Every structure is written in C-alpha cells, then in structure tokens.
Length: 227
Length: 287
Image 1 (cartoon, chains in turn purple, cyan):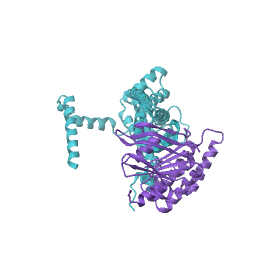
Image 2 (cartoon, chains in turn green, orange; image 1 turned 90 degrees about the vertical axis):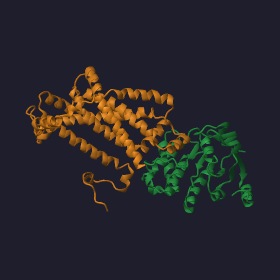
Image 3 (cartoon, helix red, strand yellow; image 1 turned 90 degrees about the horizontal axis):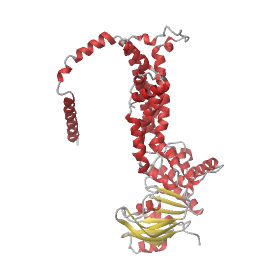
Image 4 (tube, chains in turn red, brown; image 1 turned 30 degrees about the vertical axis):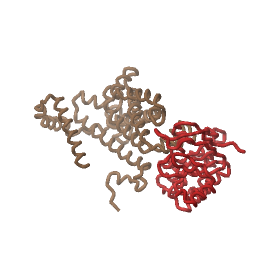
C-alpha cells in the first residue's frame, strides 16, 4: 500500500475553543475527499490548519509532501493576485512546483501554458485577473494548482456557485492531477458536487469527523439521517 | 450617522480653535493689518513676476537655438528634477527593501519592530537637515541633495509602503505561503503586483514631494532651483522668486497629470475608461 500524504493524529482544530476534535484519519494519493457539514462548524479551520496557517489546538498531523510546492491551496476567496495577469497568477503555481534548475524558465512557461489551455483561459492570459468574472477567476485558481502539480490539494469551496459547464471544466482539470497521484481535500457546500466527484466524505457533525465511503454516505442520506 | 459626522467635525474644529488660541496666547490683534501687509508686499515686491528667469543668461553664452534652455529657470528646474528623480528611484527601491521587513503580515514581529524604529529614525530628520549633514560631509552640490532626499524618501515611503502591505487582503498571501513560495518570491510576485496601484501613487507623490523640496534643500547649497531662489531672496529680488515659484507650480501640476495617467494602467477605473491626455485637463463628456 502506498504511503499516506496526510495523517491526522488525534487532531483538534479551532481558535479558542475546539471546533472539531479527536480526528484520526489518513489520506492516500489519488483520493478525493469532500468535507461536508453546516456553516461555521470548522471545515475551513480544518483546511487552514492542514495548510499550516492555523496551529492545531491539540494533537498533530503529518504531511508527507515536498516542503516546496507539495501542497496546493485554494482559499475561499481564491488567493489570486488581482492586479496581475492571468498568466502571472498561473505561473505562481509553476514557480512553486518547479525547483531551481537549468531549465526552470522553460518548464515554468510550459506548465503555465498547459494549465491555461486545459482550463480554457489561454485567450485571457494577458488580462488582469480583476477583470474576469467569478467563474473565470475560479478557473485561474484551478489552473494555478494544476501548474503546481502538488501532492496534496486543499480547496475551500472552490467550485462555489459555478454553473454546470464550468464545474465540469474545473473538475476535468482536477482529475488530471488525481490521475498523477494528487490527493484532493475539498470543502463543499453542495452535496451534489461531493456525490459527483468525491471518493470519500468527511462529514463534520457535533464537533467530530465521520470518515465515510461514498456508499456509506449515500446510505445515510437515503435513510434521511443527513439533510 | 450624518449628525454624528457633523458632531465629530465640530468637536475637532473646536479643539483646533482652542489649541490655536493657546498657542498665540489669545493675542488675535496680531492679525490686524496682516492682510494689508500681504497685499502691499505682493503688489510692490512680487508683482509682476520677472520672467527674465526664463530667458538666456548673459554668461555663459547660450549655444542652444531656444533661449529657454539656457535660462536660470530651466537649468535650475532640470537640476532639481534630476535630483528628485534619482533620489526617488533609489529611495523607492530602498524603501521596498525595508518596508518588506517592517510589515507585520510579511515578517515576524522581532524583525518588524527594529526595522520600523530604523525607518522612524530616518524619517524624523527632515530632508533639510539631511541636506545640511551631507553638505558638511561631501560639500556643496547636487550629490548632497540626492543623498539627503534618498535618505528621507526611504523613511517616508517605507512607512507608507509597510502600511499598504499590512492592509492587503490576506488570501493571496496565505495561498502562496501554503504553496511553499519563498519570502522573496512572495514579495516580488504577490505583494508588489497586488499593491501596484498604491505603490505607483506613492512613488509619484514622492517624486512630486522631492521636486517641491528640491527648492528647500537647494537653499542650503544642495543644488537645484533652490540655489537660485536663495540667491534672489538674498538680493530681495522677490519678483524673480515669484516667477520661479510659478515654474515649480507648473511642474508639480504636470507631475500630477502624469501620475493620473500612469496609475490608470493599474487601477479599476482605468479598466472602464482610460483617460486621454486631453481629458486629464478637461472633464470628458458623459456618454
């Protein structure tokens, strides 16, 4: 069996009070995990803790990824440089994903162009991000992660209010990463998206994480246990 | 809300009035006749402006076809602009370095605090005092002016820049940190582009400020148009001083228009309608 990319060891997250406690789970390459649960329950805090932006309240977690470029993160507000061009934003991912080498410039521009084409935003490459629509900006954020090729991708509601066609474009891109072994953890508000793409569900309920397979989740929702 | 705002403005005005009254010890009689004095000084000593300052000097002989290029006004103004330009560029780069080490969202507090103290120390000496120091160290001339303005620019712009950086939205910083980008890469590729509008505005403001202050530091021998202003003041040739002040005003207005044009390339307003040179001066018609 492959090594896990992330292991939570009795992890508790929150700010002053724990929001979710006692988490013990592992994430393996190629998995897509959707974190579900009502607003304010700690989904974002969990993702921010794993990305290293918030300290764990107790317990620990082990990230088995490259220190530089091994972790991709799309925050709720996407984290784009609004005054820079689309190409610049996407190249940031490539910059993080490619270390210093003789051919780094060529590799960076190659990866950037590939990601731009895959997300269908190559024609917007010279436009400042602030001029794009919300859906296009989500595609830019995804292209950035695609160019980075991280081992673990964390995404906080990055599908947002995207229409169906945009969701498909974005997820096709994510799927190419997954095929290369990237594990994806995404905070989701819509059960539909989770059902379509996730391989596992982390359901947050009463301050605890329930690690469920898709079948288990479907059984529960059919049984009317969850909304 | 509106009444609260009026209330705050009223209280501030009242406090300012009381403070002023205390400063002049209630002696408002000093204002008596002040306006007449000003009118007499202006009409008899400054008016009309003596435009000989924009005509060619008698010595050295003018070799240009256009007399203006050999005039005191042009030569002095150009030297001031050059001093201000070099000082602004060097000061801006220096300020970027220090401000990135002073912003609390970019570096830990134990680095930010000492750098902030250093910037405060640099800023607490006005450029005039820096100019006097450099005139003592390296003698009269434009180099003293350049160094004086550079030091002051680092302190002044440094503060504006680190406050701008601290005010930026945190999501782009968080994403790039999580991605594993280095500190220098975050500064160059995230922080500076994201704040480009403010940085450009501050840069142009500082250039304009340095041009205006070039007149002051010139007085202590640090070169530029201030040298001529100081000379004319000594010989009580106020109408020539007035002509040079008008010249400085024109240059400041031009810099302001330039600033508006340059910033339109990075601000949101520019996305909708970029100003032409003409509508920088004349308000464009609403469509």
